[in-house]
Length: 318
Ligand SMILES: NC(=O)c1ccc[n+]([C@@H]2O[C@H](COP(=O)([O-])OP(=O)(O)OC[C@H]3O[C@@H](n4cnc5c(N)ncnc54)[C@H](OP(=O)(O)O)[C@@H]3O)[C@@H](O)[C@H]2O)c1
Image (tube, rainbow, N blue to C red; front, side):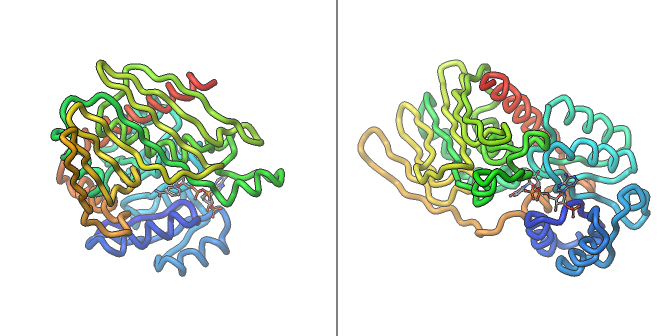
């Protein structure tokens, strides 16, 4: 049995618990919170046998094999590093760290401690993205892509009211790029590799985080534009344009309805056979890696390239 301790008591950890429940051989043994009452109540909510408000003590416990880190982005690195150094496997929410260098440090520490570290990039393990990847070869030479994820956050209303909100707090590495744009960047890297160059612009909101933005990602003979927002909404689909056909993707973080429009005028619609709930796919991947099955190198390459691209976007947009 792979026994998890969770760090973070928000909605995403309840989703993680639902994912764990779908994966045999994995359980949540402890829920951690900075607050004892919250830890106890949250453990009950997600069905964890134990709870703790003492993180160093929890990391030292022999009853924990792995840690799931779901705190504000700027905290991931330190918490993941402490867990790795305590000999625990670590599944860390997206974006795994703020910089690629930090993730490389986690990788080196994990190698020393002989444990697994993996970014919980739910969308990378979505069957819809795998289907998109399979279809790319039928589009002819790829020339253009447009990927977007724009969803207005209800928490933006709090920002407009002058409140400090974690997800829009630059001190916690909040902002729309790290929260939603990261899904476009991860898909971009997964489908086309790391761009050679990026040009970007962003829209700051109260507190200084980015609320929305856009970037051009440049490759030899190919260019992609990506767009993200937490302060506006869009239902314009994403697409990949090849010289022979265009692939229209309903929603890049979870592709379900795909359309291939060929230059001969023919058209094909495809539905991806995938459940609405997909978080268990990353838990399965992580559990297999912890059991010594599979090689995490491609996952780590994607994470590092994604983090480098996010850094390049931030530099260009500043
Ligand atoms: N994969 C997905 O679909 C998905 C969806 C949403 C979010 N996420 C990721 O999950 C992570 C958490 O996001 P979120 O919006 O849920 O964050 P959040 O609500 O701001 O914080 C998550 C938890 O971290 C702890 N926390 C909050 N502020 C803290 C602080 N200043 N110092 C120490 N601990 C603090 C809190 O737990 P306690 O106070 O109980 O300790 C809180 O429940 C982010 O990395 C985000 O990108 C992923």
